[in-house]
Structure formats: structure tokens, C-alpha cells
Image (cartoon, rainbow, N blue to C red):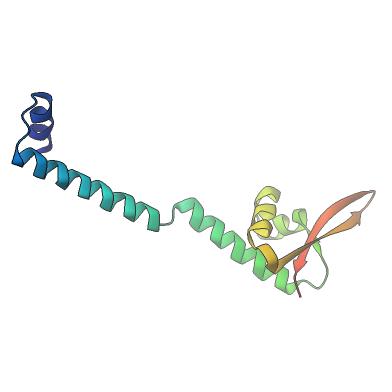
Length: 112
């Protein structure tokens, strides 16, 4: 039974064993598709993971806390992406407040 025939049988209210088996087949296919989507990383998730790794590697090389603008400039990402990567690293990165010129900014460094 094709999907079109299945839909037509439902519209015509002709529910029999073939229609029920086709319905189960469609549900199984939908479940398989959803399971694959849950386990597969999207392009954006892969890019974010790569940014996190790059930020972590950069921070491991630093001896002093660095601001998000510095991280972004060196790695070629936006300051918002640098902040998000630092937040996603969780306990691996420590936030501190540093004075830059006349203002205070948040700086990041590897936790010890």
C-alpha cells in the first residue's frame, strides 16, 4: 500500500488490516527519523564545539586573564561567540574582573 492509498483509505473511513499495517510502518519510519535527529549534531553544534576547543586551547597558553575581545580577535570569532564558548566550558574556565583603561571588563583564564 502506498502512502497515498493509505491516506485515501483513512479519508474514506475504510480501516482494515492493510491500513493498520501501513499506519504502523509510517509510525516506525517517523520514530527512526526522530531518533536519528536526536543523536546527530547539527552544523551549528559542530561549529560551537570547534569554537569551544579553540578557546580552551588558547586559554591554556595564556598566563594572565584575557578579555573576550582579545579571545575573539586572536581566534577570528565574534566577542559574543567567545563569551558563549567560555560559559560552555563551565568549571574549566574562571571569570575575573580586570580594569581595562577606565572601565572594568570580564576576563577569562583556565581554572587551576
